[in-house]
Length: 142
Image 1 (cartoon, one colour):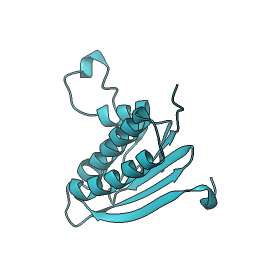
Image 2 (tube, one colour):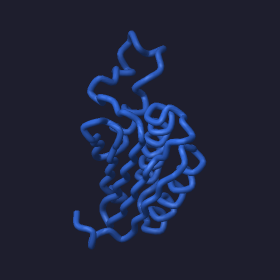
Image 3 (cartoon, rainbow, N blue to C red):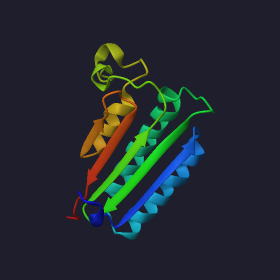
Image 4 (cartoon, one colour):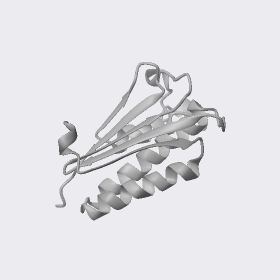
């Protein structure tokens, strides 16, 4: 999508703190509401972005207060895209265990990635695995 098609965008570098990420997420959600996105889509974006931020802060940056998280949000009439990059070494998303495996139901890990994939239209990672791009295509009210 070319830059001219975005109707709203923001780019922030935040401290490795969930509160700072929450303020940007709230700004994004207000924009989606103003653009009359359906509540199901807004909820999906909220859940996926919250999970991605938690993963960046806790798993990527290892709660290191000296590290930062970069968040880039874009909204178009039919698409929202959020890119979150941490300063960690990254990970292999294909190696994340399936949290629905009966042997793993009681174990932590993998649920956030599973939820992002379930609620977004597309989830992509860069090669090192320290950047995730979340995209949600707009659903139309039925």
